[in-house]
Image (tube, rainbow, N blue to C red; front, side, top):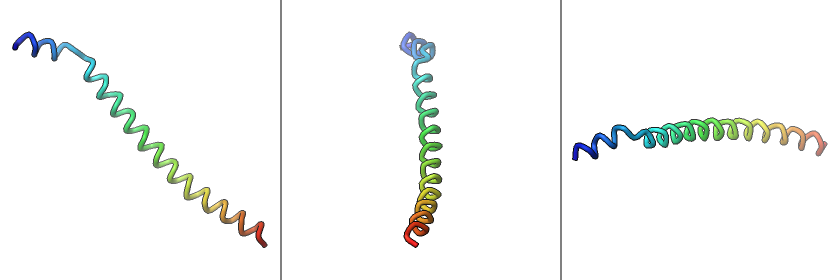
Length: 55
């Protein structure tokens, strides 16, 4: 049992996977926020252009 605990403590692979998961989550939050911001601004811009063309 003590060999198993020592082996778990010495392995770093689990920490690497957790770090990548955190980085992926942060990147996804930034991308989703940017898409939402750009989406609402582009909708306003396209509506303005459509109104100008219709007149």
